[in-house]
Length: 248
Image (spheres, one colour):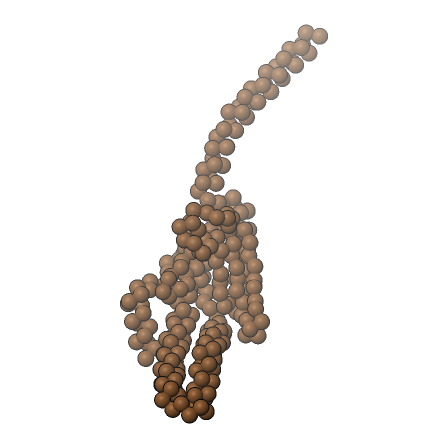
């Protein structure tokens, strides 16, 4: 049943297949996925949300039904009981649908890392794919809530420069284009160390964005004439000093 639901969602929602590796050496590409315990975490959160919703709706209806039955208002009590059954059926269908979406959301998470950049894809209804180059990453941090700690999973937060109110955020309110998460992984420290090592290697090699390299070339080209002039001045000064010593 779930397999049919998944194929239907992939077709109707046009969920793309496995993402391509981000820029970099494809032989260095590594794929990380959310841990199986992350699915347990999502199911726990699903149970809490749906349990609260069920209690919030059913308790008032049950109290009303009991009160009407106690006052011998049989017709009204029957109507409330019918409404209660209908609402319960809707809530059960909604809960089952959301549970299937939780499973699909877990399966459609991709975390890819190469020697130059990383790419994260997540989402079902709205698919979000974001790519960061190591030259732009400014901060890595691991976050872990109580339930995550109990399950042995964590989220790795990746932040880049320019986290202010950019044009991209104005076009997509509520979407932070400078922050991404490796959600629900059980090797957060390992992934953090891998990315940190790639960042160090990237910066030690003098690699950066194309704009940074172009700017460096311009600065180098501008510095060459200055070096030539200084060299000529040094030669002339040396010649003058030798001439002065010869006339003594």
